[in-house]
Length: 436
Image (cartoon, rainbow, N blue to C red):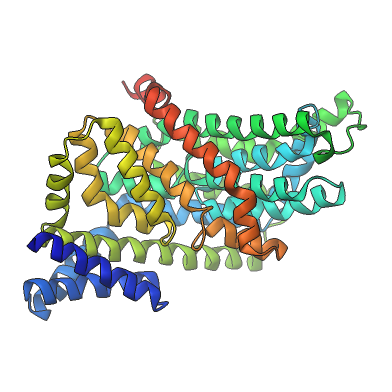
């Protein structure tokens, strides 16, 4: 009963502070500190010592260096014409599939995800390019918005991924293996999205008008030229990781250097652009890292209160099968996704769910990919769905409507989770092949 009371107090504090509209990191710090003070009677000096120790440990973690680097690379791409070339490059290839240019959202987000690591950045960058073009050509608006919201979330799954880096640090698993594990599931979910659009287009051709365009071999050659900067960055970043030349943190720095070089060669780099992208990366990186440190403090507080161990014992006492446990955890993560961002979900829940998953026999790499997909689902569920906010800001469409348009893609992600549970080798085959 004491453990249940402690868990109830912590949850009540979380909802209270989040409901007050406090910054996420400030709310988490207050919850952690108050929990230790009220429930354990810990004095303020010791609470402060614990907090400083955690901040130093996570603030000096070398793996975290990848986060600002990948964010900076995304800023450079976002503010140059590298992103604008996406639509021109993808249009000839997408035009041959039922649904035609609607697939540029899926293909564009899949490519951009491979050099971004952020769901919101992927949705914003691809959306500012494709949505106006699709509207001008008379494509179905609801499907255009819904597919962008769903495909934008691939920025978390297809490596490099900021959420995967956070999970790898906290779960103490290889980030390189996690990156390899995310490739096939990311492509699988992208294929589910494109398959859904194609079926919709075959049933109702009016959602994708046109189709009279004829592309020559020269058009395809120019399209590949337009896509070449992003393809080069993909090869540089992912190739350096999987060949063992660089760690994920080092590969992120290599990617930034390559992005700066491409911008310079195309005569877009300037002192003003350099400073603007750097400041944007600093702002976003500070936000992510401070949430990570605050949530690590909360995780430590929950450990002192024995909440994870007691919750694990309570669920373990239910004697659930692995699939039943996975179902319960999925419901848990869907509820968390209604209120929290991806990094917060991972760092706040992992002390509870990771021991349960490992005890049930799930591979830690597989569980990391599963967790990322569950976080992705939270990106398109109101009221705190970051991709929904991004698309609302781009188009002015009410967030409720965007959420409604995104619903089919939410269920497609759920189908993806079922397929990964039934066929875990989809996740594990590449890391096992590359790293043994």
